[in-house]
Length: 283
Image (cartoon, rainbow, N blue to C red; front, side):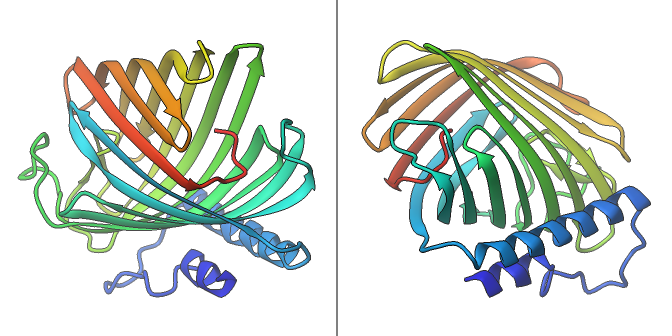
């Protein structure tokens, strides 16, 4: 399993057939940092005891601009310290494989989550996705929509809580490349166009919420994304309501979406998740 993660994260078998383009210094340094940190984590994990497996199935649909699909996630978590039962004071390491599909859009992602404490951590990973059909909500004559693309990411996560209130925040740096250089390409989930050769994406996500009861939660969600080389930004504001019973979570979000390519408009998101086997993550 570890060898599989290392080979994926080391970009083996995911290099484009064209001649390799020279990346900008920032992207190259980020790639090197990601690989170095993952190697250190993999070496460290060999000293930890038996892993516990987690497995979930989730689905999401956003109506404006249209985006969504089904995600199958499997992971192995190693408890670093503490006891997770009824406390947030523990640390863990988790390897994960995510397979996402929307029929004509398919994505595979491997990642490593390192949380020294359960509410603060960093995630490192690499993904590859392929799309074989034009997106209905974007101009696929002007922009590239069909093709194969790969990316890495570094993400930090912070989760805080007080009584029935909670706060979630994450920040992600995500360099992305098309396997074949043609023209600027669409990134459907954030509603922006990436530079034809390579792009650096910054993503910020926050939720301020209130646990009404053991089953019901409501809150405000803000999502901001920005492309650097091909300057653009997108923003989403949502009010969300979530219901959780046993292993099933359902949520509905109502709000707005705006991007450099799409005018401000009303947007809704529907989401479900079924957790077949629980993970050590608290969010």
